[in-house]
Image 1: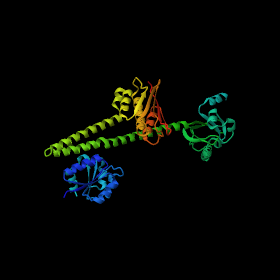
Image 2: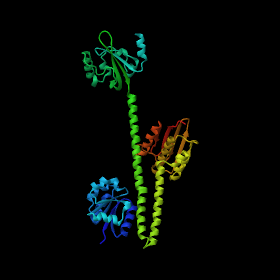
Image 3: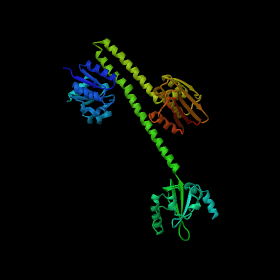
Image 4: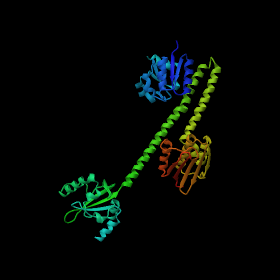
Amino acid sequence: MPRTVLIVDDHAGFRRQARRVLEAEGYEVVGEATTGAAGIAAASELRPDVVLLDVHLPDANGFDIVSRVLAPTVVLISTHDRQDYAELISRSGARGFLSKDQLCGATLEALVAEA
Amino acid sequence: MSDLKAVLNAALDCVVMMDHEGRIVGINPAAERTFAIKEDEARGREMADIIIPPTLREAHRRGLQRLLEGGEPHVLDRRIEVTAQRADGSLVPVELTITKLDIEGPPLFVGYLRDIGDRIESEEALRRSRMQLLRATDEARRRLERDLHDGAQQRLVGLALTLRLARAQVEQNPAAAIALLDEAQEDLASATEELRELARGLHPAVLTDGGLGPALRGLIARLPLEVAVTGVPDSRLPIDVESTAYFVVAEALTNVARYAGTQRALVELRLDDHRLAIEVRDHGRGGADMGAGTGLRGLAARVAVHDGMLSVASPPGEGTTVHVEVPCGS
């Protein structure tokens, strides 16, 4: 059974791209949300395996809402690099962090498998 | 004695003489002006009652008492800053030195005082304007980071993902791969254009290379406005003056495009002997607020660095006029 993914990001272009990349690699994108609040609600409702959570959302800071996003694996995403946020990432409780340009099935799978 | 009187009369600083009982023996005209009291009214009265604010009087009396009893002087012959009081009770910050005259009999004290209200005020104004400049710089950096993040960086992320998809399709579905590569090329073109736009916003290359005229015409060509420009100087001005003039016009016109509800604006430049005047006018809805956006405030701080001035008139319903004058020493 393919892994299900919820994308929480306010940039429509990125959501579209990420969906294409993930679907091409056998993931099922079950939902998209554009704000932190909508992301928290969608995660509770859809119960995806993985949530991609943008760190800069219009209504929230991704780091602060990781614990309220209900999913086995929450991965923070950003156009910035891991080094930019190292301390915030480790404090956030997220499973991991992906620079958006690094998004692909293999890197995502590696994060999921770390459980 | 009349020589001494002449010396005291001509002094710019206030001179106040006090006897060992704390009574005023004489004051010079500068002191009369600063403390708004005539020498005749002051003479013979206790100095504490006249030029020392009530909260400091007790300390003054104790200090004098201690000194007369042979105590170590705390305030003699050194510069101190303190608050004094005028005859009407208003306060005035002063710097002063007090010296004890070495004469026969009971000692005589002479205080030299200078009103430093103006200096303190201009120091504060300077500090405020430096803070404003710092804030404007920080704000500009934040805006740059946001613009980079929301613009070119997003495009490049998209580009990376599209290329990855294309790479995966190359063998099995070449047609799809080609479509993706076309898309990647468009993303790249957009990223390039956004970076150009950003670079122009930072400092347009045409301003450095060609001066104010070409830079302003380039700016106006990219704005969704019909703008008439007059009085562009024929010669080059100091580069910092050109930059300030450019950013004033750019900010003012951007505000017209965003808020004024009109598509027309007027830019008038006038170069006098040593001064560039810049005026940007529109007949839109007016009601612009200097405090609302940091754009104009940042510019005001920038103009202030040139010892220039920026004013905004924006009565509701009657359009907005931004007027700037910058000395340019050319």
